[in-house]
Length: 187
Length: 253
Image (cartoon, rainbow over all chains, first blue to last red; front, side):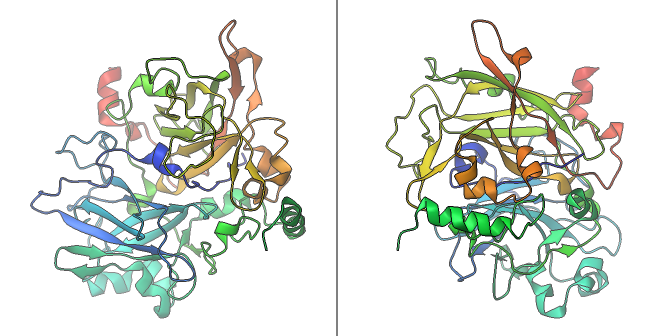
């Protein structure tokens, strides 16, 4: 079985991928809502105004959501998935809940997919919650990444939420991921 | 200096001498916009954990049946060649990818996107938006009706034209299977000139993006048909019956 190759989302992805409420996993007024936001930058450090990010996450109790409804949100069901396009200044944002640990001692993270015009194929990464130094130190991925690049995978806390920037290339380049069956699909 | 198609062809030929395998090369200078937008560090290999072993659930509350017909979204009938595109989505082990979301978007028959950034002076079609969504069936099948898109110019180099294509966004049962790609039509004369298509330097892998004309999908006096089967990467977790979203189990019962 030969897996289909990817191709860029191109410049007109808004047409096919945008829908109302796509970046609001919870309504902004939700008592536990946090803002997960940041910028996407290219190899010159310039903002990327035509990127799209998707996040997929556990709920605050660490449960992995199994409920549909991400495309037509009812305002009550937490589906764990959302999509955000960057604005002309390269900024994106989600309104969501902080994910919980899926097992005791595990460092919670958002699974992140990045697409853009000029980016031939999607990129995978993780945005870890900051704060639990013990769990972060014990994490398999963070341990496998050199200390100089580890920070690209960890969000920064601010008063009303979390900041996670994506650098596609160059200084501070984000650590992007592959998985055994993704790598081996084309071996 | 403005680049000509001949300049780009030379670069495409040079890149083909350094085959990058069956995935697109992220670092592919003939596609100018990729130059500053590809990571230079190799991807970090990691075993998927937690949410990465699952994917968001989509169900009938997310997608209405008529979203799979791009020809009925306005008062009139869109202009162009009416087609049906159908196929199956399978995972890397040949299992159907059932109940998964497929999103499509495309230009109209004249090669114009309904998007403010598309400045190609070809006509918009008031009866065509060019957006569709559907869920795969239990056997992984999908099907939608649309208008065959036209090729269109872009500004990668002077006289650059994209082969006609439909954008596809596809989910599997696992986060790691996520893919966005483009489906092309057989025999397009622009294939050899297009740096996005040619960024996949393995010709067999490129061919996987081309739909086949299928007379069995053609309807008398109505539309022609194209078949395009899609294989995702393999799952790390064996899918279970319980992967079917709760609401769909209830609807089927």
